[in-house]
Length: 294
Image (spheres, rainbow, N blue to C red):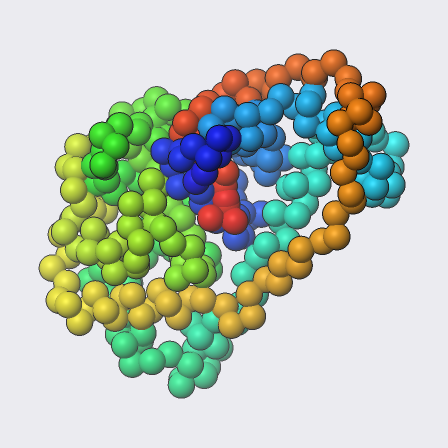
């Protein structure tokens, strides 16, 4: 993830796909609602690095936004709260369409999956043990697991969920991401260290790299090269044929600096949930976003 000043963050932005159905958001689960999450990147030093009051003043300075907010939130002014509502409302529209080859196969089309993807399905719920965490229609249990990621090239340790919930079992644990459309959401892992799904499967195949506080579900899988290919084929079959259409809107034209200064108001208090608690370089879109962005 690139943030303020084109600085790269330490966490990979998670996808916002199906985030409407999550009870805990971000890689460490520190937000419970999309509205809470929406304001975090604005104030985070590693992302937009802007006080909420400045953001609100900028939105208010664009005349075209006033009628839009009035229509969407009658009786409410443009504020950090209504901006959060607007962002969260949009994020809730990004959902799986259920048109992947896997979905067609589940509905009875035996030709929808290739032979390799069908073998991968059996491995996913069998020898690969992937279904232990990637369960349900979205292929995530919504839980947090330590999957044996080492500190990585940067050498910085990341305690993950433990920073939010200081239990020993949560040290180095991160939220299980959805596998819906996973072939479209590279790079992978909480720090984006892998570029391909094959690399991801190879990580699990060797049982992870760091054994400290490793989740009990993690163990060497002893998959063959063919079995790795088959698992990758199955995950590729989770890609919707008709993904959610994202149409770039015609945004209201901005005004000049003088007009902005005229409407500038004193900065709103920093939201402790969004700004101070969000942190700096570990910010994640979904990812202290996304992938649209965890």
